[in-house]
Image (cartoon, rainbow, N blue to C red; front, side, top):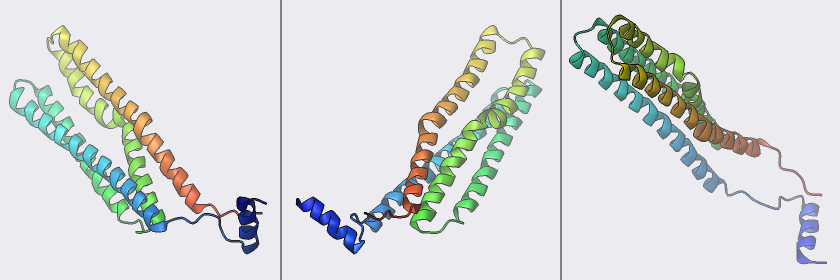
Length: 192
């Protein structure tokens, strides 16, 4: 009999698991995943708030001649407020998770789920509110043809990039975390 076969028989008689998980190393790895998910959410939220605020200021200071510029600035500012409110809610939810291996995985999953939800609804909370005053301005004023082409293309590109990031980054990351969570929750199988 080979050593491996003897070991399997011995381990099955003792009903001891063949492999032992280094729990502290696993927890550090999971904390790293949790921290990365949190950083991605923080970066996206802060970046979007800065972009909407700066755009609002630019629209108010540069394009003063049109009431639609003020509407666009207000829409951008309100989008920034919407993102801030979502950030505050997400941060409150994050505090409810335990500081355990499963709690850290659940927190990482919640952060990634938040990014997926933001990407899926991007059109409704960003593109649509900002587009309405822009289209109203285009219709009421003589706008150069290049703006009719560039602005819809830019919005379409933003929507495409957001969806691409969701499919290529966030959804696979969430699936990986959910798989890891399922593995941790599954009962250890007894060797026969």
